Image (cartoon, rainbow, N blue to C red; front, side):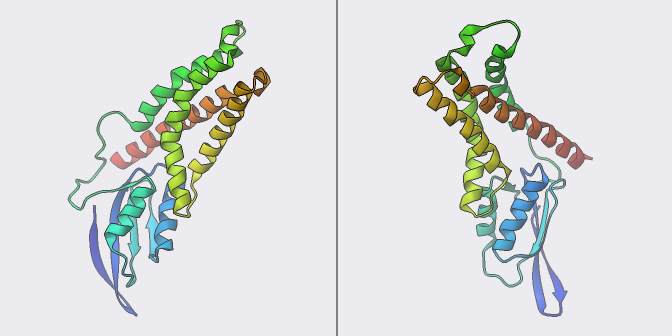
Amino acid sequence: MNKNSQVETEKGQLEQINWKVTGMDCANCALTISAYLKKQGMQQVTVNPVSGEVLFEKNGTKIPEDVLKKGITDLGYTVLAADAPPGPAKKGMNKFLRYLLICAPFTLLLMMHMLPVHMHWLMNPWLQLVLCLPVYMTGMHFFGRSAWKSLVNGIPNMNVLIALGASAAFIYSLAGTLFNLGEHYLFYETTATIITLVFFGNYLEDISVATTQNA
């Protein structure tokens, strides 16, 4: 929902903007959007991650609303159109559930070598690389892109930490594989576990937020 209203202040007319933004699933998302709007000169910024409501005052700034919307979109969120119906508009499979279903089977296979039953064939570094690669690519498709966009905009978010942690484990393991350094240099299951667990947590959080919004 996108509506503009005029509010009286001692200094004159302030344009108050009320947007509905989707894609927020935690307080950090709200802080990211709030920091971006304040950086653009907006005032009295209020962002509610549960309802998806974003309120702020332009205070005479000349930045077009389309530019602000594009900035929020670049951070990984969506500003709904003015004629969008109230309430959640998402249909189909939850995106975090979709990512989780892609990553979980590969992650479980990578962790099977920890079972009491010995499966030496799972310790093959090249096999672990093949199993980890789909999970890592899926994670970077979401967390990596979001992290990069947040850094470009000068507003680092939590996805930066997730991308760094997963990438560090993956690159360390890849070096161990390429230089044949042995199993003590293999942390592919760590890479996959970080990404899969965060997707699982995001899915649970998204379901919780959607339930609250419906209520």
